[in-house]
Length: 107
Image (cartoon, rainbow, N blue to C red; front, side, top):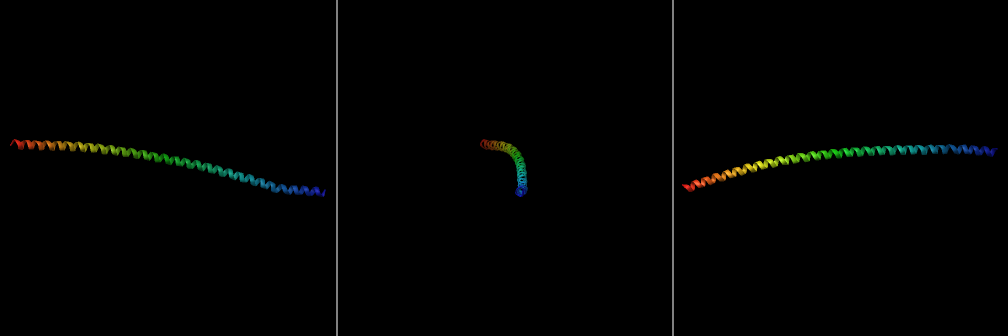
């Protein structure tokens, strides 16, 4: 009877640490799962933020490109106008010079 009582008490004493170890394993698994969830959520947030930043950068680049193209077009038009005026002025000067030369030759 004494041996049986010792065996029962030993079994009861062994169950306590085993239950605590099992609880510790469960708590560790819960903490690991929470860490994984937070990491996953953070990763999604970073990816979303990166995508938004990339889209904004693309928009700014597109707008800048349009502005540069518009400025280049305006500059080309102004250059064309200036060349046209210069050609007309040169033509007028040549005609005037030719007329004066012709008048001088006639005299």
